[in-house]
Image 1 (cartoon, rainbow, N blue to C red):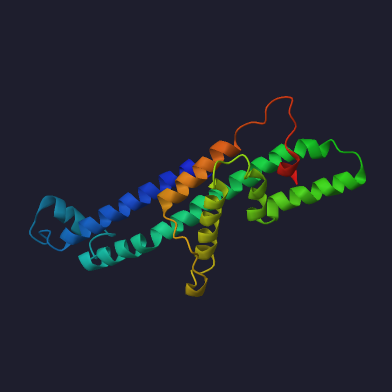
Image 2: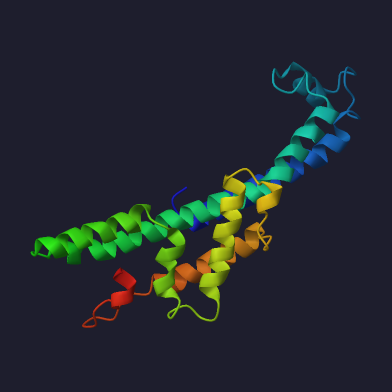
Length: 195
């Protein structure tokens, strides 16, 4: 997955597939097993399905569904973060490459390092003026929730905001729409966007 849309499509497919599996599991044990029904006989010969009971299918579907939303927020934000970091670095690198003074080149290298590996929360700060309302804060809520999921969902570290996948997708997509607007020709990138 390389785009936010790819990540969202994965989530929707996984959500729908696990819902269908959970639904099928309700009827699985009531199928006419061993009665010569042609399509059930095909299932009975299938190496993957013949030994699976309805309870095992239901338990597996529930396990997937119980974890899917949190995993989706983690994936959505990870793809979003990689996109933002890559685009900022792409914007900065040509200007950094033009610098000749060794002090400025070192400073530019430090900025590129911060863009690539530094605090993502700090990386979002310069975009607050361009984003409407509290969009950057709402993105930060997704970031904090993703961090909580990624670091083991410890109960003592539960974030104040419980972010669901659709909310995460909508917030991140809204930020990308603002973020990806090109800097008008003839106007330099605002200094705070490269600091």
